[in-house]
Image (tube, rainbow, N blue to C red):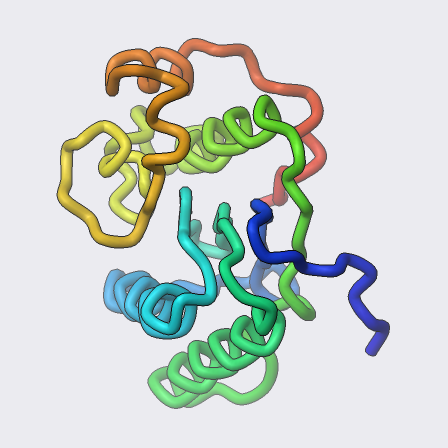
Length: 189
């Protein structure tokens, strides 16, 4: 397996994403999404590996925007992915890889890109025609951003000051044109 070219550095933001092997589902029912989120808390948050800034879990892929807090991120993600895959394989009597290779990562080094990335992540379910409004997708951090739900995963305080209000963030997400620098991330359903 080729080595990852990206070097993870603490104190930086990264967009982490992956999809199902052969574009297949990675979530088969509501409990799978919930288990995935619990595993994120266990592997990434509780051991102080990363803050999750934004997330969206889609039927066949996921997006995480993280702020890295320690240097063992790749090992933690490998353990997290293996744990989730084993749980799914056991539950559904499957074997083999659930994900299409190792997770993908993009270093987010510009504030404007960071803000537009949250928009992209939160609009994913709308663009996939799963919901009409982004706040209607249960498996996204968008409801926390809008203060419609009290979640413990997203830590978006660092971005909140950029918008000054929930309404301003909603307007940004739902009315701003797509940022062309993020379009390359689209997964085919």
